[in-house]
Structures are given as C-alpha cells and as structure tokens.
Length: 354
Length: 210
Image (cartoon, rainbow over all chains, first blue to last red; front, side, top):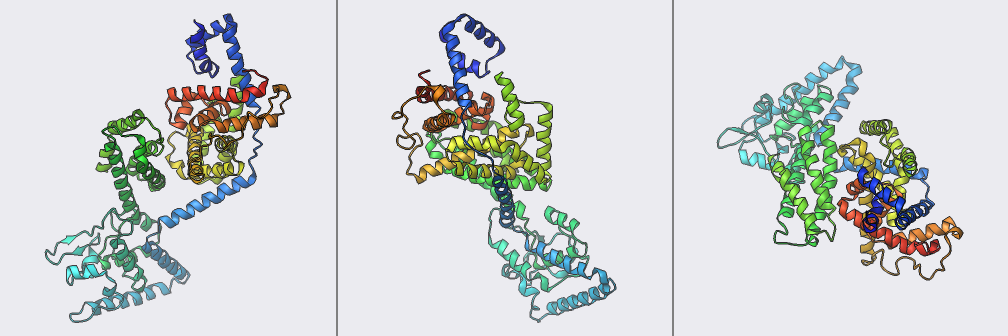
C-alpha cells in the first residue's frame, strides 16, 4: 500500500469505519511505515485533547421541570387548537346533569316524561300550518337550510327516523347528505354548525329516537363512552338542524393533505428547467408548518386507531422532512434525489387516493 | 480501548455503540410506556439523553442558557412526535435529529436578528491569533476548553455539526448521515475539513504538535 492511499483513509481507519479487509491492510502498513503511524498517532492525540473539553454544563433539575411544563403547555395548546365539538360539551353537560339525578332514580322517569311531553308539544305547535316557528326550534336552524328547502328543514319525523341526519331538497324531495366543504378551517358551514348547536341545550330530545351517525367515527366513539341517555339528545339536535356533523379530525386531515399535495406538486414542478435551491424558500417554510401538523395528526390517528390515516401521514412525513431540511445551498442533485423518491413512492398519487 | 470507552458512555448517556439487547429493549419499553402516557418513563428518557443532547446543542449554539432552552424544546418536540418514531431502538438518533433541527432553527433565527452575520465571520468569535500559545501540558483544562469552544465556533455550521457528532458524540458515519441528512461522502469531506481547521486553530495551543 502506498502512503498516500493510507493517509487518505487514516481518518476512516481511526473512526472504525473501514471494512475489515481494508482495516487489516492499513494496520499492516502502519506497522511498517513510521510516517503514516505518526499521522494515526496525531489523530489519537487530538481525540485525547478533545476528550478533555469541559463545557461546564450540568443538567439542572429545573430543566426537567421546564420540559414537564412545556409538555403540559403543548397538551393544552393542542386542546385549544383542536376544539372539542360544541355538541360534545353539551353531551357532557347533559350527562353530568342526568348523572346528578341518578341517586334519585325515582324522579327520573317522571322527569323524562315531563320533558318529552314538553318537547313534543313544542314541536307540534311549531309544525302547525300558519304558525310561526317556535322560538328555540326552527329559529335556530341556519338560514341557508330554511331558505333552500322551503319548509325545507327535514321534518322532525324524517330526521328522527333516519339514521344519518339528512336534509330534504325542495325540488327533488330526495334526501341528500349535507356535505360541508372539506378544506376550510373556519368556513361558514362550521359557523352554522356552532350556531345551531349553541342553542341546543334549550331543546332536549326524546330519548332513543336518534342513534349517532353510523359513519361518524368520533361520534360513535363518544357515544360508546357516554351514558346512553345523553347521546340521543345530541343526535336529535343535529337532526333537527338538518346538518351532518362535520368531523373536525376529518376536516383537519383533508385540509392538511390538500396543502401537502399542493406543496409536493409545487416542489415537484419547480426547477424543472434547472432552478437553484433558493427558490424553495416558500416550500421549506410551508413544509415545516405541515410537518408540525403532521405530527399532531399522526398522534390523533394513532390514538383513534385510524391505521389507514396514520399510514398516509407516515408516508408523507419523510418528504416533508426532506423539503423542510433542504439547505440554502442544496445542490441540484439533492433536490433531484428528493423528487426522485417522491416519484418512486408515488406520494402525490397516494395523497390523492386518500 | 476507545470502543470500550464508547460503549460505557452509551450505557450511561444513551450514546451509540452499545447495541446490547438489554439496552435496546429498555429503550423500546420506555418508548412504549411513554406512548401509554407514563410520565416516569419519559423522565427516564430525559435522564438518559439530557446530558448528551445539552452538550451537542451547546456545541452548536455556544450559549449555555440558549442550549438549555433548546434542549427543553427538543424534549417537548420529542414528546409530541413520539408517535411518529418508527424504530424505537433508534430513539437516540431520532432525538439528536430533533436537536439538530432545533439548533439549526435557532442559529438561523439568530443570524437573521444579527443582520446575517455568520458565526464563523471574523469578529463574531474570539480571535485566537493574538493569544500567546502555550504547551499542551501547561494548558489548564478550562483554558483548553475555551480554545476548543472558540475554534468550534469558527467552523461553519455543517462542519461543526459533523465534527461535534463524530468527535464529541462518537456517532458512526451512518448515524451522522441519518441525523444530518447528509450523504456519507459529504459528511466525510466535512469531517476531514473540520478536523483540519480545528487542528490549525487548536494546534498552536498544543505545543506545535501539528
């Protein structure tokens, strides 16, 4: 072995990164060549010096306390950023109220009868031809629902017998699902939903009339966890409003994937004619933002047992990482390699399919 | 000898090199427990990795207070993202990867606030050439540490990252590539240049060894 070959590999040898065969060859050379052995010795000496580097750092107990506090703040922030659907709160309040009555079980049937009678009476009055809508019932229904359907809000009978909440189109009389726009965070649909539900406590519902929407995972889970008497009340509120509950997780997920898809497309298409990495500043920024969201959604999906969702998010993550970590002076090869991986994994198509 | 020391360090600090079944299992168990909401398990992970991460971040940013803040941020992010960790046995690499991101973001922010002054620009770090060199044997460790720290600060970010991970954290090339996202070729080049620069800056304080 020549000395120049040996010296070219001396650091890798010292770092233990060579194949066993190469290591043997170099070892033999060091034994025979004083100059190369001296180079190895110098590296060893440097390492000893660096091992004496004392930063004077101590991990203080306060650091752990701060981490704990940070984690607690994070959990709090996630609660705020993913607000509990108002009806869940309502359901909780109703459940709490009813559970408070539990010790006095003898009063419960009587109370239920009184409440049910009151509700049916109010509904009957509200539906009498020529009568103005009863306060707190039809007046709470979002304006668009009432105007679009004429007397158009699904009649309570329809709503209370059909499993999924429906609205009736005035023209066709065919029940159609109310489909809120998927990709808006604070769209009008959501506002309507909040308004409709905000007044819900004023009108408790006949028990066991409305099962929760079968396809609404979040509601199904919640229904299973909450006392049986509480769930129908919410379902009735929803049905009376003629609105299918938008699942906040699904909306958030749809919006996230839409943004991610746009980002990946933008990245894929940019620089086709040989642009430099500096032009990806926007993509990097957006990618970092989406990465944060991705992590939150992954946790949510895992917690809720949504395997398919989690898989999509897991697949997306490395690409977001790649783009987010793209250096200012990234070479075209680096950019190309990310694009190539995107192409091979067909990530954009995967997002579309989801 | 060096490998043995590295293994011992791994057991104590969670650094790489020790891939004993016991340690791997315990890491996996800890991760599983944290995922199940066990705070004590997260505290154990913190105890295991806090020191190496704090050192690593400190080497990257050069400020004690900031390094502590960023270490805290690293653990909070780790907690948040633990669900996305696919290979629990690689927790250590994953944590360093988060720490690297946190440190780099902080450096970027600092550069923006400082009017785009690079850490390795002249005048930002202490100038070593005016100081009188001393033989290595006479240098107190504290003094030596100051010299090493200043020399580190003069390396550009990529080189400092690679040098710190290899020389101080004893990471393998493969792990460094995973943490940094650099190719093996790039990191070898950066490491070689970083060593040469450090040698040039620290060497005069070591009695003209280099």
